[in-house]
Image (tube, rainbow, N blue to C red; front, side, top):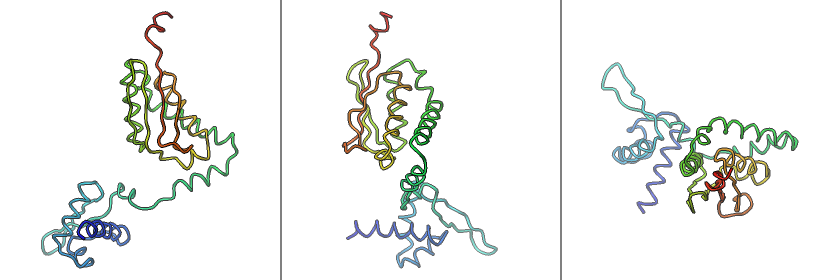
Length: 213
């Protein structure tokens, strides 16, 4: 029973903070009809995860006390409809305008991460790009097959619903990878097309080929 009860209490605390504003430990305990110790345990966990902002309340008489409200990061734990909003907005544009939009996004990312292309070591480039994608919510990792061959796996697609409707989204990502890595990049599997993950096969120019030039 405990394993089911604790997430429910945690969720109740988050909903109260979301809908009714800041609460102190004693106020939460009274509203939820649980002990202050139990509330403090959940508050500590939420704070450790970066989901709370602590405010010190000073009163004319008596000791200051703490009240808690949700941080911006906590918004991730509540429903959003960003994908549908984006799709609704894109549907108002013609095909050429959508292509221009994604091309503009690609150029901004190229400018932002130009340092990857400036790196000489192949593995460092792949590792840096994978790290960016991973922190962007793509759950990315890479494998090295040889000095010149790598594979990037992305197990999540934050824009899956958009990419499912607009192929240009995946095309621009592939082109972005090619330009940042300065390598030949082929996508052999795609989440938006029903794949288990997005797979990018990367082939750098071999040293022998570079020397012959």
